[in-house]
Image (cartoon, rainbow, N blue to C red; front, side, top):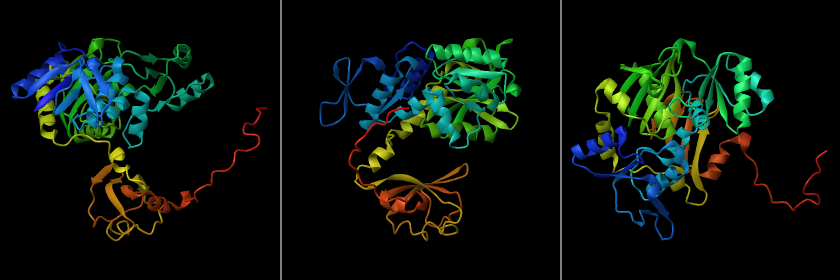
Length: 397
């Protein structure tokens, strides 16, 4: 396998470990500075240049995109995807994970346990937002902070209000989260590779510090995760579009609470805490997947006019409840069920004999008009384009 590690820090521990693990396994590997790429859109096929020359062929890339170059870095990763080069972490996955609000929105859609969170911008909405997450103390987070930077614990409502107002005045966007007191200054970092947790450690804050990040002086110890915590970590990474991720979780009274999904997790702390070859596990996973490059399914499946991908919900009272997929008539409507979501479980490529239940969500590919016809409450005739009104803009009173 010919592997490129996209990194601006060739001497960093994580980069060196990944490079060494690849070399030890007989792979050809290079560390390429992400900022030295040029995206070439002049030819008939997508291409890249590196240091002013056409890039040679690679089987896979491993992005280590820093926070400060997220936009350009994800553009480079996206170009590799268009060139059908395998990447364990997609450009969309990296961008989603980098924005804490976007990540929280995506995970909440899939019933992932998380601390109560709100996002507001108007000053009048701040106190009601704090009350909605359970009142003070609250945790205030910058949307793009890393390594514990930009995470503030506000012990009282008035202090929280003053901090948020100050941050808003500097054009910063912040999340307001409940403070999980039972976590007691500790959290869990699970390192997900593919569809499993390869290592996990518990991090403890130092002294009165509530942030447990190693960069903040926290201590670490290896930990064996229960199936509940492993499932939460793996599902969170996969939902975000990441096959290599560090998932940070709090130990809540009712189970794991996911705080963050990191697309470029550091390896030094967790390798030394667990004494496990995590870099090697990452390289082995990539080597086993190079024949299956990540693709944008919607992009590939919607190039035909009239066809697309959509999610159909089996509402209570639908006539297909109790029928198998084969009996439902979906195939006769030229619709193919790609995935069935039932509660927290996912059935990929479900068989024709699977019986449908109320509230099942079917990810389907097929004719969009047929799928629209299966949602009666949203069915509308195609609206005609009307002439511009004589007064196109109403005067504000």
